[in-house]
Image (cartoon, rainbow over all chains, first blue to last red; front, side, top):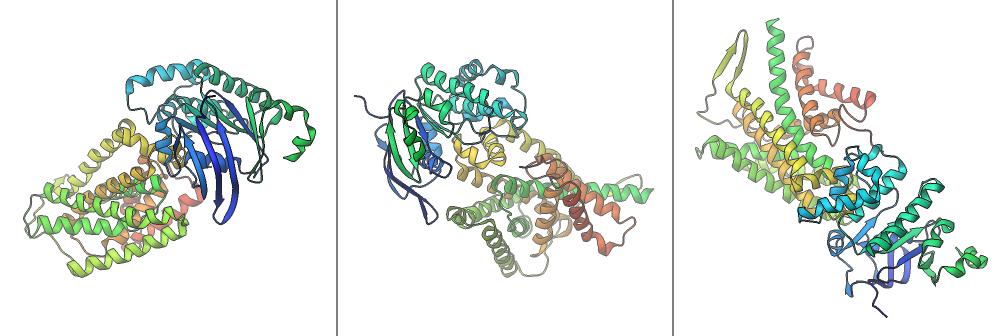
Length: 236
Length: 289
C-alpha cells in the first residue's frame, strides 16, 4: 500500500464569513484519476482552489508528498509539481498559442527542457501545433480547453487538478476531453483530480469517485455502484 | 501655414511628453488594475529630485535624471508595498484602493510643498539651445523629449516581449488569476511594474523641469493626462498609451489654431468623452469580456 500523493485532512474553508467547506477528507493516490462530483455551489471549485493555494482554508491540512502545503503560494505548488486547470478555458486570451504554452512552463528555468515539452503537447494536440501563432482568445471553446490542458502539461506536473473540463463543450467534444485525460494519465502516469458535473461521461473514466454536497463529502469509493444506485445519484 | 507647422511640431513635443507619462502610468494600471493617482505627485517629486541634484548640487543632467528615477521607483514600490498590497490582501474593493490612492496623492503633494516650498523652481544656469527649421522653432530640451520616447518605448517593448519578467508582466496584464496559476508571483510582478512605471515618469519629469520648471501641483495634470491617454489608447496596450499621448498632445496643440487658449485642457476631456462613447476599448485596446 503506497502513500497518497496528495491528501486533504479535515479541510474547512469559507467565502468571507460564510463557510462553504466543512471538514473534507480526500486523498489522491499516485497514478490515480479521482473524480469529484457535485452540484453547482457544492464547493468543488473552492476545494480545488484551496488545495492549489488560491484560497486560504480556515482549518485542516493539505499534504503533498507527505508535507503540509497550507499557506504555500500557487507559484510554490506549481514548482513542486501541481498543475491547476481552472474552470472555463484557462488561457491567456491576448497571447499566441505558443506564448500560452511557454507561460505554462514559466516555472521551468532550464530552457533546454522547453522544446521537448512543446513536442509532447503538440503530439497530444496536433491542432495546437497548426495554430501555434494564433491568438488564444480566437480559438474555439474546445481548442481553448486543449490549450489549457496543454499549458498544465508544460512543466511535467506530478498531479493535475482539472476543474470542469467539459464546461460549455458539445457532447462529442466532452468525450474527446475525457479520452485525452485518460491518455495523459496512462502516458505520463500523472495523478489527476477531475471536478465534473457531467456524470454520464466522466464516471466511466474514473478510478475512484468522491461526491461533495453542500461542502461535505457524502461518498468516496469505487465509481461502479454510482452508475446503478439511483438513490445515490439523487443525493446530489 | 507656418503657424500650422509650428503647432504641429508643438503637438509632437507635447505628445512625446504625454506619451511617456502614459506609458509609465499605463504599465502600472494595466498590470495591477490599480488607478495609481499618486503617480502624479511621485512624478512631481522626481522633478524636484532632479532639481536638487542638477541645480544646487551641480550634478550632470544624466546623473540627476538617474537619481530622480531611483527615488521615483522607490516611492512607487513603497506605495504598493505599504498601501495597495495590504488593501489587496484584505480583499478591499477597487473603491477602497481608489480612495487610498487619492489620499496618498494629497499627502505626497502637500509634503512636496512643505519640503520644497509652494513656489516653482527652475534649474539656475541651464541654457538649452533654440533651433530653427525654416519658420519652425524648438529647443534642445524639446529634442530630448522626442528622443526619450524613441529610446524608451522600443526598449520597453523588447523587454516585455523577450525578457522573462517582461513576459510575466504581459501575462498578468492579460489575466492575473491565470498568471498565478502558471506559477507567476504576482506580488513581485506588481512591485516590478510600480518600480518601472514610476522610474519612467522621472524622464518626462526631468525634461519638463528643464523646460518649464517644477512646482508642487504639477502632478495633477500629469496623472490626469496619463489616465486619459491610457483610456483613449486602450488599456493594456503599450502602443495605445503612446498613441493616446501623441493624440492628446496633437489635438491640444492643433486645437489652438481655432480654439482659444483657455480651453486647452478641456480638449482632453472632450477627447475622453468621445472615445468612451464611440470606442470604449480605446484606439488599440481589445474589447474585454
